[in-house]
Amino acid sequence: MPLTEEEKKKRKSESDKRYREKNKEKINKQKQEYSKKNKEREKERCKLWYENNKERVLKKAIEYYETNKEKIRTNTKEYYENNKEKIGKNRKEYRKQNLEQIKQTQKEYREKNKDKIKQKQKEYYNEYTKEYQQTPEGKKQFRIARWKYQKIVPPCTWDEFHDEWEKATNCADCDVVMTVGERYNTPTTKCPDHDHSITDGSPNFRGFVCHGCNIRRGK
Image 1: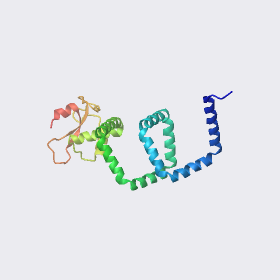
Image 2: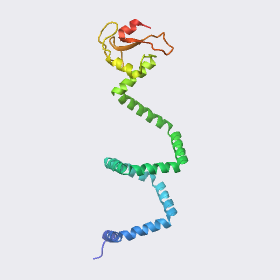
Image 3: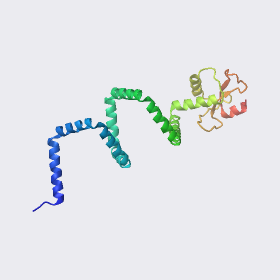
Image 4: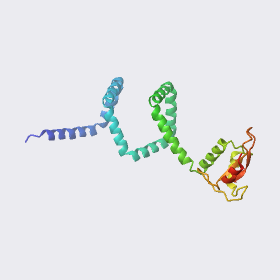
């Protein structure tokens, strides 16, 4: 009984597979020799194929990445850890050899994606600032920046001044227990009072008082 077309294809596929497994080294050697002899031609052929199938390739790459995200990240991290020096050296050499091209590519990308870059920077800055301001160091730096904006000049370094601010518990005027408000002031919010008439850069700090007393003191 003659074979069907489907059976013929299957047999041929199995035969080809057996041949490839049996002659793996020979086939690889032939491929390498062919690539060497036809390097430019193969390069051009691959480039042309990619240009004609760009969307398809990109779609498959995205699908593969989404499916194997964790595996790719783990493998990339392991490879980087095992080849850190080699990667660093290769990057340095590549950058040195292609510096002008890299600069031009970066410039073109920035010009083409101005709005996108600005939006990403804004999002990153907002997110980073929001997270950073919740840390002890972030809160400290935010307070110091605010005091500088208010033109307060302490008689010591900003780090020492902040330490004194943290230690202060009672208002220097009314002795009320002061509270800490990060955004909105209440009558008992702790404030560093300063003399507004001293504007020559010399120390103008007058004491830690509650917000109510700070208003009563005025300038």
